[in-house]
Length: 173
Image (cartoon, rainbow, N blue to C red; front, side, top):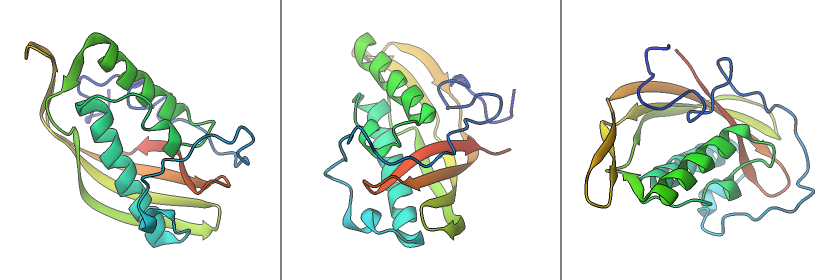
């Protein structure tokens, strides 16, 4: 397994054979909802907006697994995003089992735009610190423990007509 692997399975991290392929750009035919709380800076369709969107996505991902709250990532995701489906499944499992992570699982240590040559697609590199956390129930019983790791990740964002949407995350290294 890659050096960054802890108790998250490849499926939980959105990896299938190294990465998830959701490269097609589609319009949003189902008119999926957009998160109304997306910061104004993250709605701008330029590299700075993509960086702000990526930061916001990571913030919501932390909430989804530490509070936990299912359904808060889907409005930030491209309709075909397998990565988001996996993360939502994890959130739903945590809610159903009455469990959560005992703190935000990720901290951004560095972030920059990798590729902005296509106005409808943006690649962002975020170096994440996977924080040392425990999966606990309401009584504090520990079910799993994750160790601190550095996770460089390429976030691929698409403009699907609703605004920026996460297509997939490719964990590098």
